[in-house]
Amino acid sequence: MKKMKRLIPVVLLLGVLIGCKEKEIKGEQQPNVLMICVDDLNDWIGVMGGHPNAITPNMDRLAARGVLFANAHCQAPVCGPSRASLMTGLRPSTTGIYGQIDDEKIRGSSDATLDVVFLPEYFKNNGYHTMGKGKIFHNFAPEGVFDEAAGREKGFGPKPEKNFKWDKKGTSTDWGAFPENDSEMPDYRTAKWAVEKLGTDYDKPFFLVAGFVRPHVPWYVPQKWFDMHPVDGVQTPPYKKDDFYDLPAISKQVHEMPMMPTTEWAIESGEWKNIVQAYLASVTFVDHYIGEVLTALENSKYKDNTIVILWSDHGYRLGEKGTFAKHALWQEATNAPLIISVPKGQKGLVRAQAVEMLDIYPTLLDLCHLPPNAMNEGKSLKPLLENSNTNNEYFAVTTYGRNNHAVVSEQYRYIGFEDGSEEFYNHTNDPNEWQNIVTDTTYSTIIKKHRQRLPVRNSLWTLSGKNNSVNTYFEKQRKEQSVK
Image 1 (cartoon, helix red, strand yellow):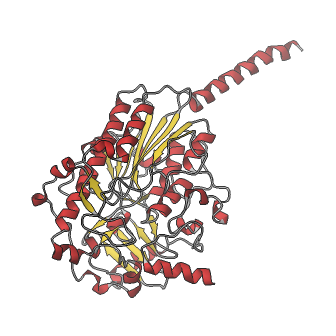
Image 2 (cartoon, helix red, strand yellow; image 1 turned 90 degrees about the horizontal axis):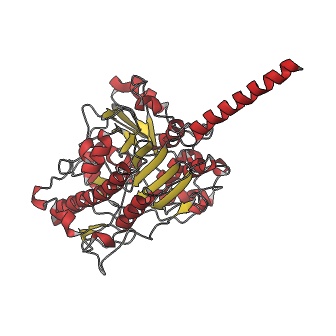
């Protein structure tokens, strides 16, 4: 009996020590998360070298403080399905979310999403104080995801009474200097909100999301941002007029964008440089306000215990491949910035491995010592952040409509369509993807390896939510399914 009494204090002491350790991991010592999402941002930032006229000192300094994944790819080259994939941790081919969908209709839209826990929600359920403002999901976020839901201003305004250059139905595309002051822009207010939140005290770790809408169309920002990119010095991206001669018929149908300006129109009208200038100005504008948020973090008490992650939902074509749009399975539409800065982590590294925005969910759980979510279809990038597993082979998959996929590796891009047609590009010899070499037997083994990465599951379209697709091919695909 006396022996038993002596053991009780020891057991109690062990319990206290374990409890303290759990508190250290789950409480004060858990890192905060600052997530910055940017709409329609391609590789036109300085550190990625996507355009020689890019002026993005703040995103560049974030990359210098962390790791840039220069070969990161979205799961869908459209806002709604891309963001739904990132926030659910599930592929579009699993959920059937291939087009735009209302935020409130994501959960339960298919059998795959019945029990889904959204990324910010997972942090909330594990003791984090969650906050968000701006464009995070397609609109803002489903109800209850954030403890503090600051919402999003509707649309992509402000807008002039009449469009300046482009006024076709089905797109917000237009460009020009407007409005007069930055304070009239939604991104200005999102940045100020985030700065305020970084100056607030919290009794638990926080998960803070700021969603910026520029450079999404219309490319309207005040004149001073245009002045930083004089149009005479603006360079237009590479373009090949007869680029489509070696493409299968379905590729031309899938990538048809009748509402958008074509590159030939932009050349004939003399607007190409003006469009590029407007996009560059929009990127520099949003970079400035991202910088305000980063500076607020650096000046706060949270600077040494906050993970910063910046991502975009997809890229954007500015005349490459014949048009001005996202909506494609080619490089400029799928490749987007992904930067992760971890306190006391690696700095200034650039990763060439093909990674996915789908990897963000499991990566953040791993970095924050949270239990993994078994539903996640992505992988943790922590090994690459810690400079290990750098010799492993990585692949990224982008889906555009049902059973149309691109599979990207460090050197190659494979595209497979629902009718069995294919494209294949070697980026070492052909960075602009002008030569479809899928019939070159030299690459048979490599093509087979990429083909094996295609999703096995290709769910039917999730038809809930409004459809505002500007692509006639997918409108036809959806209607055929609804008839069946």
